[in-house]
Amino acid sequence: MKILIIGGGGREHAVAKALVKNVAVEKIWVAPGNGGTAAFCENVDIAATDLQGILAFCLEHHPDFVVVTPDDPLALGMVDLLEENDIACFGPTRAAARLEWSKGYAKEFMQKYNIPTAQCHLCEDARAAKAYVKKCPIPIVLKADGLAQGKGVVVAQTREEAVAAQAQLSYGKPDQAMLFEEMLTGPEVSVLCFTDGKTIIPMPAAQDHKRAYDGDKGPNTGGMGAYSPVSAYTPALAERCMEEIFLPTIRGMEAEGTPFKGILYFSLMLTADGPKVIEYNARFGDPETQVVLPLLSSDLLNIMIAIRAGKLDRAKVKFQDCYSACVVMSSGGYPSAYEKGKPITGLEEAARFGTVYHAGTKRLPDGSFVTSGGRVLCVSSTGRSLRQALRNCYRGVDTIKFEGAFYRKDIGSKDAALVKED
Image (cartoon, rainbow, N blue to C red; front, side, top):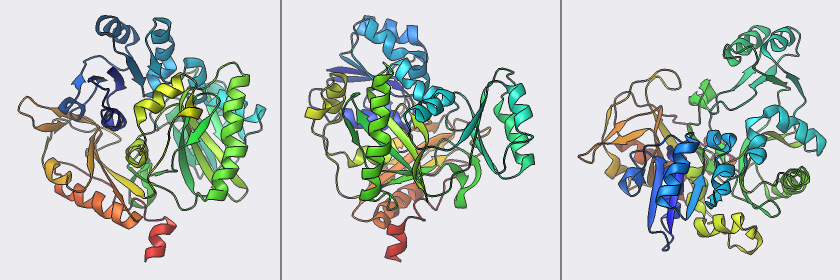
């Protein structure tokens, strides 16, 4: 089989590494890819959002299967376009992906199907949001409606912070819709699920670390590290989420006439009143993918093919009973302005402690690597305990050097599994 993966981050590197394990895979293209995928795949210089460019490539090169991973091309309808041209594709349609690209729609959907979530108020444009922010309850969570690479959310503890956040998240657009939500408290977990629109199979729960700096300080990022499983997400809670959240979601989408096929990601808050949905994502998360896929002992390509065929109930889906963790290394200045082109060393040594997933890297003709993005690398490791997995990650991180590199040193530190070991 010849496979085309759309995207260019650490998530796509992880997906490519998982797919290449299938003996039927002859070739993998990645558009646009990164330095890591260039080592064993063929990178294609086409932007993930260039629908016509991707279509033209497919019509010329005839991939047997296309995997669309980022949120933007899903929101633009890439799966719809490719399937209309008889190109087999993995990922939800634009209508199904609306659960992610429209926060307002997702809220209306959850209310309609009685799926537990935070109370909210939707402002249709910046003018309405500017008026509402002056009288909304405090503290408050502000969310820009639409896609924002994980950075479109601000938790405001004061009126001044809320006013500033509204101005920031309006992006200077008068028609920018804004969602105001009650602030939920409790452990936050991510549960990525395989689903073909009827059957849904959760992966082990993961916990992302969004803030840039230790102690959950600093600005929101795309994610600075993660681990799995999460102690707070007990078997009893998993069963409750299945009955109250996961199954109602896929049944609701089917009832809406937009069945969801692909990866459905539930961002959950485990509140004192029970689990509640913070938001949906319509694809693999990053860096959650870099911790859950290493735990998958079944064949990812076979699962994806079964999902597209509506036969997930017949697929083998098994995960290892161990821990997985990852630490993201970022460029100095991220998530704001940062420099590119910094030489990277120590990658081979780091691979002795786990898997190094590339995100913002470029491979030079001599085989060396330089930085080319905000989140540069992700070191992922597994272990019999969470402590062992994290120890391996940080040993790998310690061997990698590039100018301005920074990373969080407290990934997983709050989990009960680690506290229990102490």
